[in-house]
Amino acid sequence: MAGTKDKIVSMADRLVRTKGFNAFSYKDISAPLDIKNAAVHYHFPAKADLGIEIVAHEIALFTGNTGKWAHLPEDEQLSRLFDIFRRYNSEGNICLMGSLATDFETLSPDMQAKVQEMGSIILQWLTNCLEQGRKNKRLHFKGAADARALIIISNLQSSLLLSRVMGPSAFHRIADQLLEDLCQK
Amino acid sequence: MAGTKDKIVSMADRLVRTKGFNAFSYKDISAPLDIKNAAVHYHFPAKADLGIEIVAHEIALFTGNTGKWAHLPEDEQLSRLFDIFRRYNSEGNICLMGSLATDFETLSPDMQAKVQEMGSIILQWLTNCLEQGRKNKRLHFKGAADARALIIISNLQSSLLLSRVMGPSAFHRIADQLLEDLCQK
DNA sequence: TTGCTTACTTACTACTAAGTAAGTATCTTT
DNA sequence: AAAGATACTTACTTAGTAGTAAGTAAGCAA
Image (cartoon, rainbow over all chains, first blue to last red; front, side, top):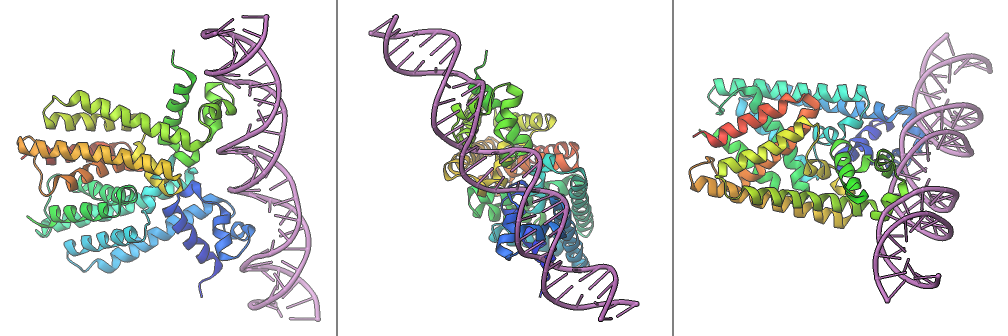
């Protein structure tokens, strides 16, 4: 019973993750939904408006999820984050950040800002999770928590990209080794 | 004294790394070189032909470089690899793999194959470097060498992407922490 | 000097992209 | 019942895109 607008965002989200922001057109959205090109423009006048909505939707999902996990131990929270990426991988999707970062220079300034906002939110959450986890002796790593957060996000992001090229097992090999590094002493 | 063909490849390489394969046009190449659109088509009839040449050129550069490093100790070889990415970062370029992996699904089968070839060559070299380095006690890491190679490549690739979004210091924080992890006991 | 090749340019085709203006059917409010 | 808002469609413009066909100027080869 989802409205057309939601269907457009959902379809566009999928297209960004599979083809990239510059490689899909309004027709790629309108044709499968059996509406006209102009109907997409009605809801999102410019492509950047649609892009911003996709990122905003992802931010909402992320903060919703992490909020639900807040009561869990940190290693468990981290594991949930990995699960999300595991599902992306099995569905052949890459993460939004990974996709939009490649096209970053070609995005409008307001869309660039929204992508940066998403990055900050994810990194801040992960840095905090790692810091708390180390305090509780549930996670083990050397160096600064924010550098480690960068490494982990960077790995999750890129493992989906590599999976696409080198086969989907690449993701599992990376994720399993990373979790082992962090959780075992 | 470089010929037009070389200039085209070099310009296209730069464009792939800054804008992405689908986001640049033949005009983006021909205009700065002060030649016509059709001149690019003369050397590379289809865009995929140009793409394959870019990847082939990168493979040649990589094998050339690693060949020159072969006599160095493994930690030194690894450091050279990081240096290459450090230069990419300072020039605002992302690596070819990172850029082409995002657009992978939209590439022609023969271009996909060439990208996969590049991935295999890089991973094989790095896996071997890590394995030898561990034997010589110059590098330290847990788990399988091929999984660790995936992690390192994945990090280098993605750190350039993150740098673009979160600021260029992201790369240095990731690279420094990674090298510390591997080189210190 | 004739003919062939290389490296282009000129001038186009066919197509696709984002975006818009104006019209229409269907609810909702007054 | 009238007026407006909502959610579109129809039909279009403008501005690109990759790609091509045909021509040309310069160099080399017999």
